Amino acid sequence: GEREAEQVEGIRTTASLFTTLGIEPLMGRLFTQAEEKVSADRVTLVCESMWRRTFDSDPGIVGRRIMLNDQTFTIIGVVPDWRLRPTDNPADMVGPLRLTDRTAPADLMFISGVARLRPSETVARAQEQLLSTVLRANPTAEPKPQVFLMPLRDRFVANSRGVLMALMGAVGF
Image 1 (tube, helix red, strand yellow):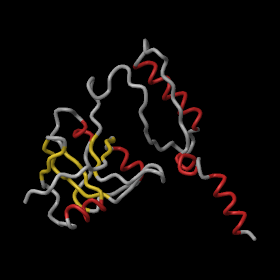
Image 2: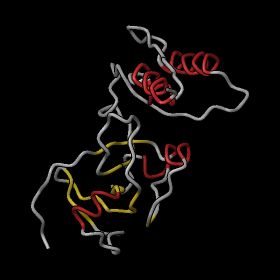
Image 3: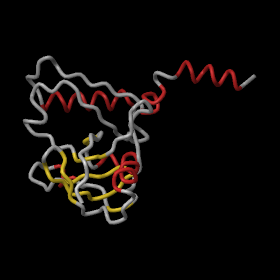
Image 4: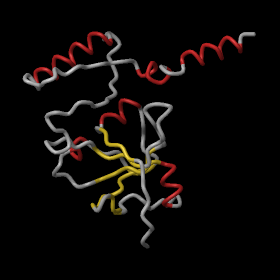
């Protein structure tokens, strides 16, 4: 039946994020690169806590069609709750990132990403290569694009480093 509308926290990402982070669906499947195209059917993943809270852990949720912002989406899977930073709220839903002139205007100022470096690659070298790629794609961009890379572990503990060090010292006594 019809449910009352609720506000949900959603994120959009590329299909490769799941393999980069080693995330497997609890049921159903992950979205594909083909589903990142604007012309593809609208699909979404539901995160586990929302599946339990809103859909009463319905094992038949895969294939269900739901309305999001007046558009119909098909639920293709359920994924574990996750977040990119400990301070983030867990997402309720995850959808494919579909970059177009409308969703990624020429004056786009910020985009966040996650990548896994080869063991022989350094963060500094990866940053140089990414900046070179961005500049080739946007040679006349003003202001000039900048790229900042940081290891994911640093992002997780960046604001907590002092507290963590104090806790480690306290545990040592």
